[in-house]
Image 1 (tube, rainbow, N blue to C red):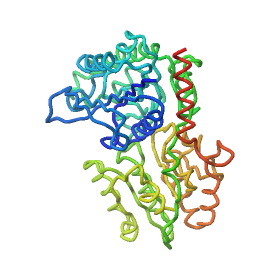
Image 2: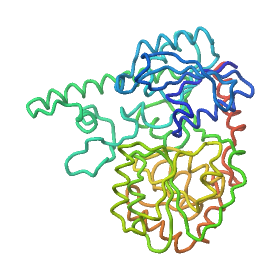
Image 3: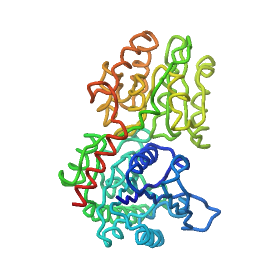
Image 4: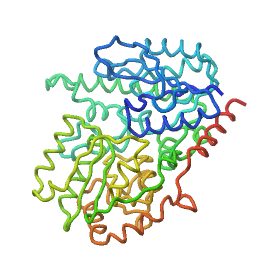
Length: 433
């Protein structure tokens, strides 16, 4: 088959979960199929919508079509005619049998309409709530005065979206507030109508957690036969031969971006509450404003705790065992948004490293309390500290939890990429026939 993968970022330029998974899937599919990628970069010093052709750094057979869309210019555009035209040209040139979308944020949602015109089946993997929430995570950027910072949102309502997430774009004049709310509520309404429209053209959605499946079928009204549950697949040869480097100090690890939604601030606060000797290593690409804010939180801890927090740069995905898992006794996933199926949880389970995460969403779906990890009360750093303290006090308990691995399989192993690729290809063939 000729497969066109659409994703809003591709490694090594972008290394969050959906991008890493998309690259792995492309690698798996390329063994039997011709794979082409349509993705984006952000270069404010290059011409808008410049198309740059490259190839996957780890698999040169995969051709990358990288379009330049600087986010500071097009942050709230969800339909971009110039992007649609370039994509249309690629469709005519490559003539794919299937288009598999991973994310359309920062691209153009009307790419789907171009695919429909060519009568090509569409598969769409759901990585977050972006279709049903304008900001993708159901977290309020401008919460009500008495709500907590980055408060959760329980449902999508146009006026509430305007007030709680887009107030930063109001004029600020009290006399104009109602006008601003009305403008942004209308913008959200138009966006949501459009998202529901294009969703009807998708032949098959893939949800990597039962939690996400339920939310999209119950709240976004996708038809149940339009959505398939299928967990992610992984390159398990990357996840072999984990060998903990000897260290007398129990070490917690965090992998991820330096953004508030990931909850690193709660992890640092929880670490500061622990008794006994322990260490925290934080991996991730620095984001100057956010990272400096995290440094400020660390500076409020006592000196001993500050000395036991180590910051490391982004690791290479293909070297995650050597660069990350060999250095930790436990992985912590402290996200304050309701994650759906974090890659790092699966990767840690495969190498038999226990995970502490929140009792919410897909995090609690893949970690079961006191079986293959520990759960804490979502968004509660004191509850997180309580569970972290248990492993500092009983490191052997940590090893026992880690030994169980992935509970959804008999042998504790996560879905391998080859089998996952076969499942994806089966979905493709169903749609083609």
